[in-house]
Image (tube, rainbow, N blue to C red):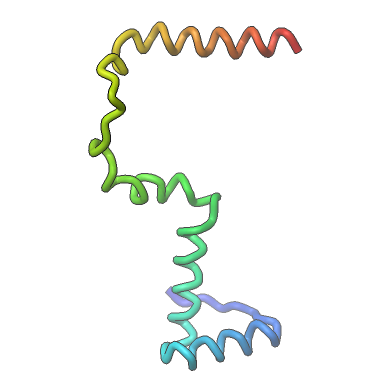
Length: 89
């Protein structure tokens, strides 16, 4: 895909300098910047969360064996407590 971008003069100089230093095209510098921002920006965190933790899923133990027992009741108690706190305000 081809896009056009307007840059102010200081940003244009930075782009040229980075491309020279890294010995890549200006387009490659822009692509890298977009990918880096997507990795680091909290707005895209949900998109990247699975990729960030997929190597760790299922590899750790909590030491408890009852985590999946009575989950419905536990969830109900959490929601009820939040509701009570809101009513006190």
